[in-house]
Length: 195
Image 1 (cartoon, rainbow, N blue to C red):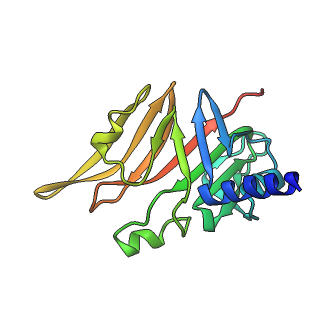
Image 2 (cartoon, rainbow, N blue to C red):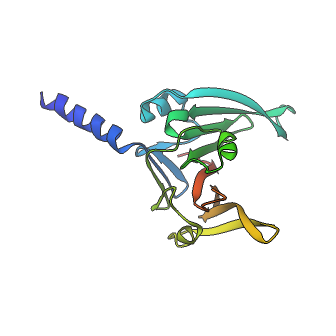
Image 3 (cartoon, one colour):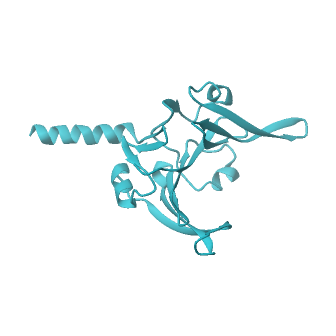
């Protein structure tokens, strides 16, 4: 009976607290388990406690040097969680993770997103908690990271185009809501070394 109650409490706690994504020291952890480009979809489905939808597409800008054909990207979308995991046929060590933290105030801009629902969990980069309410000024105070922001001038005002978190020589792409200037999404693209 204790085992059943303990299992129930662990399952309830993981569902109640949402997902936990951590990127630290060249490693990606999903709910405290190491994930890399070799982690199969069934394992990620199990870690996230939901089934992702797989889509395959060709990248018009890149050619696979081994085949001479366009690069094939396989993306596992977890729409209800605000996450995707992407793998590339030309390099089996590359994994990209997209995390949608909030909806864009511009509905047209929001509809262009690959993800529909915002992430309902915890995101940590280099032990820094990251959420959708982070402003540029707050991001620039992250520990063990530096943040750059790209802006464009439009007449008498400037708008944020995007930004990067640089952590241990890795670049993590950021996008911001143009109106609120708050963090909207995070894109981790990394070559994960064999462990």
